[in-house]
Image (cartoon, rainbow, N blue to C red; front, side, top):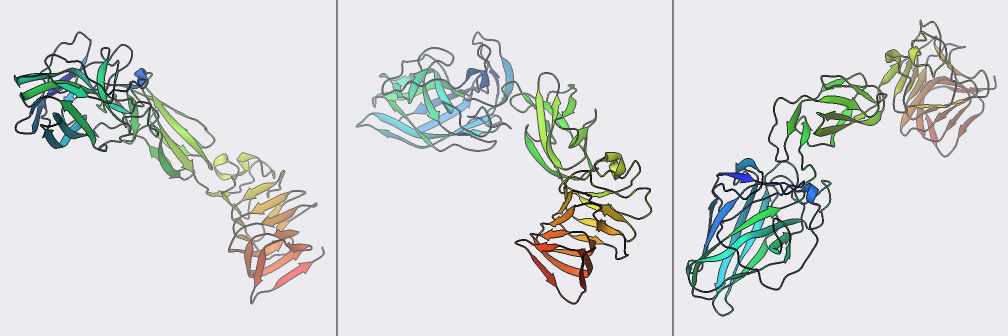
Length: 438
C-alpha cells in the first residue's frame, strides 16, 4: 500500500482533536459482525492528520491509494501536511479467497510526527490505542454484489457506529506498529471497491507544546556544574510538530537553589540538586530537567567563622553533600561547624583549620590537612570526623575519628584518641601514624 503526498484538510471534533488519516470515499455501507464495542480514548487528547483515497482490485489483488482531494465535511478545520509527513499506512500480504469470499491484507501504522501517538502521558498505552476507523464505504466501484468490513469493533468518532481496527501500541516518532489483519467479505463478482478511513489516536500534547534544544517536554539535560551556564533554544510547535513563529516564551525554575534561568533562557547551575526549567507562552509549555553536580567550594571566611553562612564561601553558597571543600590560609576567619556536615573531599591547607566543635564532619572522599601543630582539623569540644568513603586517602591532623569506609594513609598522620575503625579498613604502609590523648 503506497500513499502519495498531497495536502489535506483535517478537523478537530468539538473540543477534542482527531489524529486522522483517510482513504477514498463514496457511500458508506454498514460494517458486519463480529465486532466489539470499547470506550474511546480521552477525546481531549486526539488530533487530526490527513486524508487518502484507496481503490482495491479483487482480480489483481492490489490496493492502490492516492491523496484525497480537500473536501468540506461541515466542520471547521486546519490545513496540514501531505501523506507520508504525519502518518503512513502500509499494506502487505493482500489475498482473496473465492471459497470463503474473504479479501484480506495486513496493515501497519507508522507515526511520523514528533510526539508519540497512542498515549496521553508519553510512556503508557492509552485506552483504545491507535484506531483506524471507516468514515465511508466500502463501496463497490466495478462489478456487482455487496461488500462489508469485518472490524474489531464500532464506536463514535465522527458519527455513530463507525467500524474500526485497533492497534494497542504507543508509537514514538518514526515507529511502526505491528501488522494487523484487515478483512472484507465480498463475492467474486466484485471487481473493485473503495472506502475512506481515518486514524484516531490520543496524544500527550493535543494543543501543541514547546521544545527546548529540540526536545519534547520533560527531557533530561543531564549534568550541569555549579556556576556553569547553558542557554536553551526554544520552538513553539503545534500538535504535529510544525513551528509556530513569532511567539515569545518566559522561563521559570522549580528550585532557584539548584539552578536559575534568566529571561533569555540561560540556565546557571547553583548547587547540587535536580530541578526543572520550564518555558511557557501562555498556551504552550515545555520543560527540561537539570541535574546540578558537585563542585569545589572554597572557604573565604569573609563574614564569620560559621560554616553554615553562605557568604563565607565562594559563590555565596554553602557546600552540598557532593561538593568538595578547600580551606586555604590567609583568610580572616577559619570555619567552625554549627551543625553536622557531610561533604566529599576535604582539603585544609597548612596553617589553616576546621573546628568541628561538638558536631560531626562526615567525608565520603579524600581528607588531607597540613602537618603544622595546632592546625588541621580539630575539635574544641566533643566533635569528630567520620570517614565513609571507599578506596580513599587520609593524611594530616585529625580529632577523634571513626572510619567505616576503606582508607589508605598516604602521608604523616596525627590523630587524637580514640581513633576507631567501625566496619571499615585503614591501610598504613611506609608512613608515620601517631595517636595521642591530647
